[in-house]
Length: 583
Image (tube, rainbow, N blue to C red; front, side, top):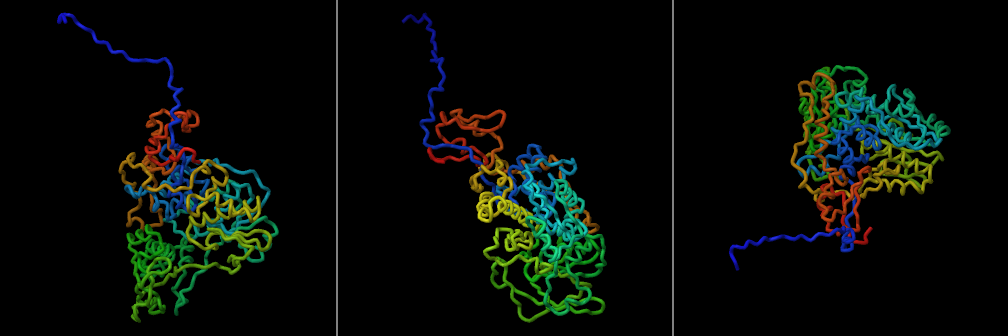
């Protein structure tokens, strides 16, 4: 070959003018991916069943009004719950297994504060008027909740309240530093704006209750527990011994009782802690005397920690045996207790530690060991074939007109959020009864459960988009954590302990919008689609279709080969992979 001859190499590429649309590779598939939104563990744990992952997603996007309305569809008192709820949702937050739980209750309060600051009016789905009237006795959290949801479902509602202001325990039993009166008034005002009529100074006795049966289509009884539960020891009626709830009511009414010296508070619940912290703010010393250990106290952990920061002393494993007056004060005789195994609730079972006693000299004693109903006719009837006991309320049909017993009267958990859930459950049950009779109640409510718990969703009951979600509760192992980075939980700004002791000003301070959005951005949004488009980006078959107007994602099964990449790369477990031919 002549070395002087140059050869040019050419690369030929095959090209076709036809599309590959004819090659429908979906026929190769034996596994089928599909979009399936699921239930987050926080929503399942929330007594009122709030759609928490959707709320946090909207907050992240700055859609504060829409996030607030999402809460209102399940809970009419977000400003209250954002302050006093014991937030079991955070205890179940999947984020806790990654770094720390999302500050859900803080964000709930932020949304409520923002809505009120901007004078936002909610726009919620409402059913047309039913023509039926319902009376609610008591304007505590259960009664207010019932009134709100009755209005949404088209019922006329009258709330009868014995006190001069509405709110029940919220108004008279929770100190101002935890729940300012102005915040509660704004929540109640919104409920009134929706058409609820609240009549204060209307004490309902047995005779009046019977008369109400003739005027209304249904009654809800939510009077709460206000009668002091006695200690059953000698000297508990001597001057200087006061009921804790009565003391809190006086303080909330504007009084400033003299509490100088050492004050003993007997009990371990939230009322006991509230009394102790109020005493400190009034210039006294507070000692909580509890018969069990500190870790057994039913009071919220944050409240106990706050009390200790403010100088409250807690004496554990001491049970009162007598009270006696001496030298202008009181001598509280206490018996030492010890732990021996566990009781039915899992707390340490206490027994006397011998016969040894000790004496505590104090200026006064506050009793906060629990409360009972003020009148026996408030109690729900015994279970029979004319009653239906649900998770959080009881319905009686003994006299023809249905009566629902809600909140504390229904038993169960004695806290604000449980009471709100009780009112909602009763309303849904009554609505089901009016539409289909007693036989439909259990089935209708069962279809509205959130996840595997007892919480109910009003949005599901109204046939909203949430109805399409699976009840499967997303676990931490089902979250693709590769798409999340470690980020510390926000530190709630609050007054310093020395500042708290000087007044009843609210302890926790407001968040900025930017801080709230960053905290909400930590949420995994378990089980719901937030439009991250990983499914679209990773699909090798370009089989994921994004609808421009609706934002909906669809799968074109003509081309999807069922590789499952979209499901694996979904950070939030909002997809599922099943055998071809499955449901």
